[in-house]
Length: 356
Image (tube, rainbow, N blue to C red; front, side):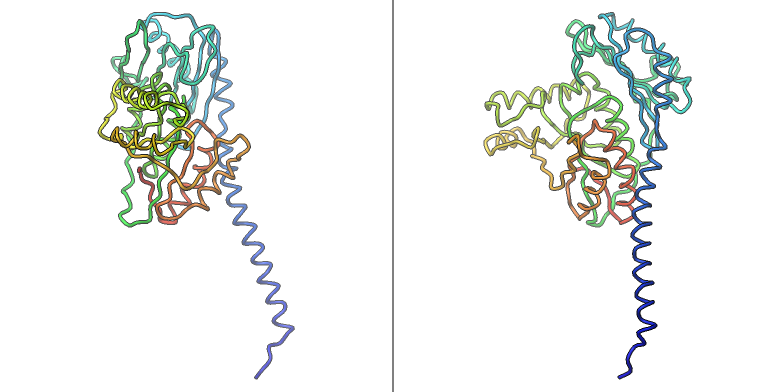
């Protein structure tokens, strides 16, 4: 038997090792560069321009991009006024802010002064419009959505101001995964997340009733975009700490919220317990109300403060198996940024994204 020439084999092995190291390095650098590209979507300049244009008691300003559209949310503290005043003031703000280059949509919250603010609580009036819709609307009343709850009566009018996006066809084989997102709707981030996903497929958003009450138009937009909506309770209480009557109220009250938001109830079939806490007694209650319990098997842990967007991205990629259900959350920019990176990768591997 002829022996291999050691002088030839050793350099060949070294070349293979070096090549392997280079491939590993550049493959990881590609992922890093993807996040670098995400960072180029930084909207600090837009946020600063918005602040310079606003007057009065400004509570908060946020702006962000998902790579397709750039949006902003402004929150102003104010004393209660009439719906007509709020609507007129919203239009003034839209008119001023849509002069800012690169800004596609704006959401406005008027917060009762001096009440402490928490997402979903304290809003007197909310409004949403896109630059295209606002600039092209005749009459101006059709530029977007306006909502409030004054004198115990809902005031809700307008239409979806966003452009339609052609939905990608569903994959007919079994290579599919399910993206689910809890909580919300949050200002700005819920719509950015949903808009990103609708360019790739479908998902399921579990909404909190109290948060939907102050921006019901988001729920309607989600359904228009092919995003499935699910129950996440009216107040986000731990169901295992509620008695049966209170737990039932949490679902029936959210049903009323869905109706007030003009959602298609026949399409809402799933319930996800807040925090994933649901004993067998409460699970039977949910099923008796005609709903199915939605669990998950891949937790991205995006809700933890210490979880980075890179770790979130790795959770999606490492959990990429047929039929897996991913748990994420709506109110986090880092989740949107992670999905900007991983959705194209997941799609390139042949996976389809579907609602439950």
